[in-house]
Image (cartoon, rainbow, N blue to C red; front, top):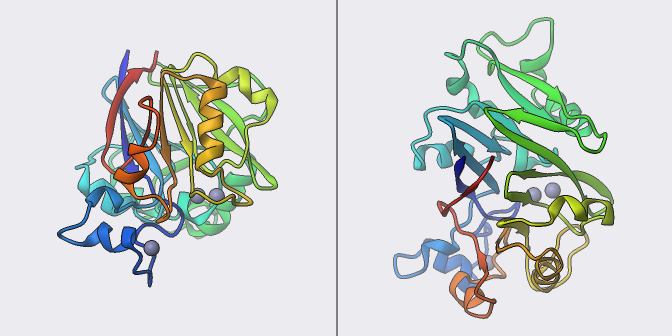
Length: 266
Ligand SMILES: [Zn+2]
Ligand SMILES: [Zn+2]
Ligand SMILES: [Zn+2]
């Protein structure tokens, strides 16, 4: 079964342009004479297959991303972790959930689910719940190895990844994997990431960073895992789209907002 993956956003937590910054990439991101591929909203992907739409993360730009992609239906959301740039758009799911026969499932590991419940307390509390809250149900992903979530004929496997001092959730689905916000991949997760057609991973900037992989480290991870193609995401204003792409091997590209790719999901 073929799925279409759309990058709803490919930027780091601050987005590009970074507010207040007038560097070449930030200016290029919004200038009529610049490169619109340098405009990066907060990171998220949409997977469309089997007449269903699954989203990984709903960041603060989710509303604008959904308008841009004319998104009319969301059937499930998978979360990677509880940082603001990955969860704050949850509330914008509201109009897309009201007409569902069942609440839309949100999948998250336990620490992420706890953060979502705390931030959106008015949606999840049993007493005095806000009446027009999103019609969603939060489901905790087991952290036992080999657990799959079955969604509309495709299997999603949780891939534990290192994000600074935390272990967060990456996902493998069919021939693709999405690893945002990683500083490293633990050895026990490596076997889950072999034989990929498509690997999407964090590459924040050129310099090392305590909680994110940088460009040279991400290239090394691609060389280790050997996917057919790799796309970098969660990028800051340090990486000009065309200039960085020109220096990368042909099978590694920078993602950009709105980029669509197809792959076998099941
Ligand atoms: Zn992030
Ligand atoms: Zn800048
Ligand atoms: Zn993060």
